[in-house]
Image (cartoon, rainbow, N blue to C red; front, side, top):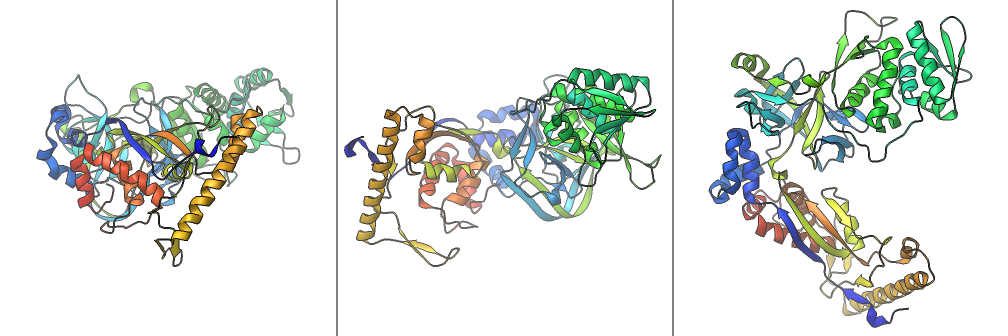
Length: 563
C-alpha cells in the first residue's frame, strides 16, 4: 500500500503541441488549387498575410452541398440525404486509396435558392453547389496530374477526370465464411428460396452449368445436394448457412445480401458475385445483373466498390417483372479502364456535360475526417470531397483525468492513441478541483449556472476526493501485488485518475470542438462546457492561434463558427 505522500493530486491539465503540418498557407494552397492548378504550388511558401481576405471568405460557411435527389453510401446501405440521421458510418476514401467508414463531424441541411452545377455524363450524374469540392484530376496537360479537391465551378472551364470506384477494401474485423459458402449464397440470392415449413434452402436450376456449380460448391462446403423434381434442388446445409440464407431478404421480402457478408474480404465478395452470375441473373460475361430488389441492386454497387471496381444502376423499362408490378434494376459493373471517366475533355463535351441551372430546395452534406464521400444520383456513383480547412494536421500530447478524455472523444473529431491500463501500471496521479473551481449549481438544467462554493464546501470536496482516491489506489496496488492482471485490477480506479494521449486533428475539426468547449459570450452560438474540458480546449486554442494566426482571427471574426 502506497504512503499518502506517494499519491499526487493536480488541479490542471497538460496540452503540448508536439507535431504540426498546419499553417495558414496550407489553407490557401488547398483552396487555390481550384483556380491555379499546379501553379498553386507557388502558395506553399507564400505570405498568407497578403491573402487574409480569401481565408475570411472561406470561413463564411463556404461548404458545398448536394441536392435532395443525391444519395450517400453508409454502413447501413445507400441513403437519401433527407433520411440521414448524422450518426451513421459514411463510406470515405483515405489518402492512400482505402475504403474507410467514418462518422460525420457535422451534418449540413439547409434551404437553398440559387445556381447549381449539373455534371451529367454516361457515368456521372451530380447536382451540387458551385463551391462543392469535387475529388478530381485536372487535365491541363498529359503529365504531372494528381488528384485534388476542385470546386465544382472549375469543371465549367476545364476538363477533369473523376473517379467512380477503384478502392482498396481491408475490413478491420472481417467476416470469414467457410469454404464455398460465399459462392453458394450468391447462387441462393439469385435462384434460391426457403421451404416454408422446414426453412430448407432450395434452388430452381435449369442448365447443367448451374447444377454443376451448385454441386461443386456444396461439396467444397461439405453439404449434400438432393434433387427433388425436374428443376428443384435441396441443399442440406449446416445451421450457419441456414441462418445466412434467412437473412437474404429485406423488410419487403425482396432478395438482399446478408449484412455480415458485406464485411467480407474482397476474395469472398468475388465468390459471391460468381455465385450470382451462375444463377442466371447475370449476363454470360458476369458484368451485368438484373434484379427486382432495389436493396440488392444497391448492395451490388457496394460489393463492386469493395472489390476495386464500381457499378451503375439503371431501371429497366423494356420488360416488366413477373406480375408486372415491380420495376427491374440492371446493375452494370465497370471495367478497370472505366473507373476514371472524363468530364468536359473538349469544349464541345464540356458544353454538353457541365452546365449551371437554378435550384430551389434543400441541400445536404456531411463533413468527415477523410474529406470524401461516396455518393450516387440516378444510380451513378462517384467520389466527392469537402473543405480546404482539412488539409492540415496537428498532434497534441494531452494529460488529463479520464473523465475529461471521455468528453473529448465524444466529438469524434480526431485520431487518438491513449495509454492503456492493460499494458502498464497506472501512476497514482489524481485530479482534485482547484480553489477557483465553481462548485455550486443554481437553476434548472438548461438554465443553470455555476457559482463559487463556500470554504467549507471546497474543504469537503478536497478531503473526500483525496480519501477516495487513496483508498482506490491502495486496492489497485493490493490486487497487483497479489498477481491480478492489470486489466482487472484497474476497475477499482476512479475517473479522476490521469491518463495521457496523442490527439491528431485538423483545423476545421478543431474549430468545431472549440466552438462547443470554450465559453465565449461573444460567440454566435454561446456554449457552457464543463470547466475541465474547457481547460484542455483553451490550451489547444492557444497553440493553434500561434500556429495559424490568420485562420484563428477569421474564426473569431466569424463568431467562432467552424466553416
